[in-house]
Length: 248
Ligand SMILES: O=C(O)CCC(=O)C(=O)O
Ligand SMILES: [Fe+2]
Image (cartoon, rainbow, N blue to C red):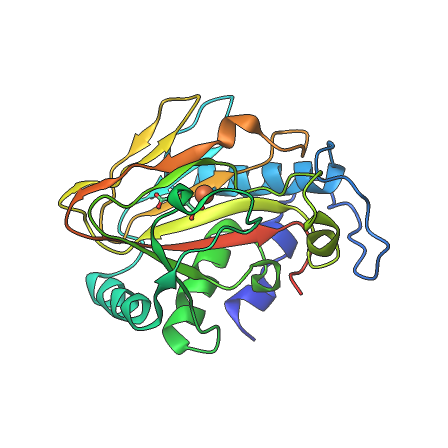
């Protein structure tokens, strides 16, 4: 039996409340922009688990659950991941297609979920957070060269976007984001959080984790963030988005 299958759902401790029942068969609530008991539960469980981990630094405050785990992946793993991103890189498109091409000027790569290293990294992130791998989208790679950036945005789905009904039925709202810095950037490329002013300098192997929902399970506007333009060198990151229900 794998370690993950022995972990209780969301790594719940004895004191934790039972998770709300998660329906897998729909119809699913049209609650992208509403508070949600299920999403609030995920917020509490994951934050508590990360806060207990002595290897993890809490960067956020009451406005935003934000954590950093330095040296999460080895230099050899990071080098292999950068090579995979190079091999599969395509110009980035935005999910909603509602912003112009200058909004996200990096290259993206859908990582191969069947690749052993991609599986290892995905499962390691899930174990750290206490969420089962079936709740994750497939890891996505990004590569930014000098001058490339990703302007301020939220990772969650807006209720009024045309693609929300489809996303609602394919795992629902995005909850947490986990982002692995696969290299140390020569200059620039920081991840900046707009309202808290926090700025994270890319450092090889570090994993940044934040909750896109607030403590009530509604979208957290304080999770707005952007990738500053790379000034020198190249920046490689891997992003893993978690859904409120298993991702289909
Ligand atoms: O590259 C970064 O620092 C941020 C990337 C990001 O926000 C995203 O891919 O959603
Ligand atoms: Fe983002």
